[in-house]
Amino acid sequence: MAAVPAAARSDSINWPSYPHEVLATVLSVRAGRLSVLLWKRARAPYRSRWALPGGGVEPTERLREAIARHLATKVDVRELAYIEQLATHSAVHRDPRARVLATAYLGLVPSDVHAALPSDAAWHPVDELPATAFDHHFFIDAAIARLRAKLSYTNIGFALAPLEFTISELRELFSAALGYEIDPTNLARVLTRRHVIAATNRTAPSGLAGGRPAAMYQFVSRELTVTDPFAVLRPPR
Amino acid sequence: MAAVPAAARSDSINWPSYPHEVLATVLSVRAGRLSVLLWKRARAPYRSRWALPGGGVEPTERLREAIARHLATKVDVRELAYIEQLATHSAVHRDPRARVLATAYLGLVPSDVHAALPSDAAWHPVDELPATAFDHHFFIDAAIARLRAKLSYTNIGFALAPLEFTISELRELFSAALGYEIDPTNLARVLTRRHVIAATNRTAPSGLAGGRPAAMYQFVSRELTVTDPFAVLRPPR
DNA sequence: CGAGGTTTTCGTCTGTTAGTCGATAACAGT
DNA sequence: ACTGTTATCGACTAACAGACGAAAACCTCG
Image (cartoon, each protein chain N blue to C red):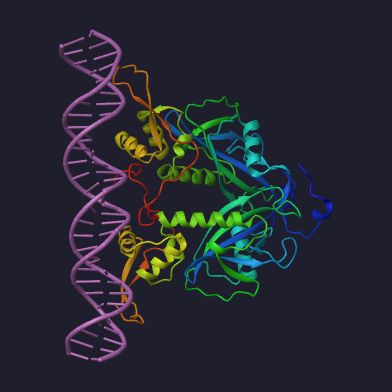
């Protein structure tokens, strides 16, 4: 990385500086339940409490690069299907040791990715969260809320689902993520009409107890796209 | 503010520190056009370019307090009807002098608030923006996008409109903010059904050229509320 | 190979929401 | 009163979503 010339650097910015940390709220549906990836702290403060993975920011890396680095080393998750910045918290005593600003990211892992986790990391269902360290539960709440909202008006489901899936599997994923049951018929119809998912011409291997084999679907795009909201506020077509 | 005991502070956080600045993207409809409040830089770098108001963060204040302080001093806007955090940028050379992290906020000012501005600040219509300093135009783009999205599925319009208004006035505000024309009949009907706005029993003074006097409306709530998105993904009622 | 069980998918009905547009209401001025 | 003007209402149409029963496509077992 090219260093900034010292002449330019030594100029006129005399604002206070703060250590800055990045945190990752990684969500995924594990065993049919929406879960968050937590890491057990080995040292004080909050020793042996569960915390979001993360850490400091090196002088030459951006926040997003920093969170990718921490996720790759501390916790073995390299295959995030989606990541976006969530929020930056600045409460003065959020870390009892010193003032640290924290920027959290929301990451999503497909339900069929089962990377090996280190022994001090584990998935925790969000409806049975243990006590967490620092202010991390605020980030977790915000991440869940944002995921649920975006499931409704974007195609963000692609980051929770395998590349190919049946409507039943998708229904389970959505129900787990949203926290309530939804109807598989309507789910397929609505997401198809919105061009969010499309049927492949393949069919799932027939299940254990027989039954009609399910058609396989895939997400049309794996980039985040937003469906038009309500119509009054939509430009004429 | 109670100081952290030195013993606790001198511990184990050896991450790099960075100056942190807060920036405000204040939007409002001025003279029928969506505009952003900019401040003309007096010093290098980007001397005499337009920039978002903002500045450093004091050791005992949170980011939101810092941006409020900067807005109150640098630029005379104390009556933001709404403010929310937008994003944190971290490009290494976004400031040529040194690495500075920046957290931007989105602020909204009602169209009937006409606070006096200092001579080095001005409203700029967003469709005729001048060249801006640093990476500020990224924040402006993000602010506009977020406002437009939230106009569709929240009641955030309360922060752009006067306390009481006619449907025509509201239609002009929405059209200016969204960038396209909308139908006043539908606007009234949809926002009323969603319980976002409600008619008062007052009526506007009749206009210059005659015509039926318009009914006055107000926003039901001036706290941000989100309307339910699409129905498949909505819990049963 | 056919009957019964299981799972998925299709089709239809109904209610809600939104876009369009013409008709009507309520004013000012002449 | 008549006209011009602005605002509001009402009716029609289209699109979308929730519900649910019927049909399709597979299995296993007798």
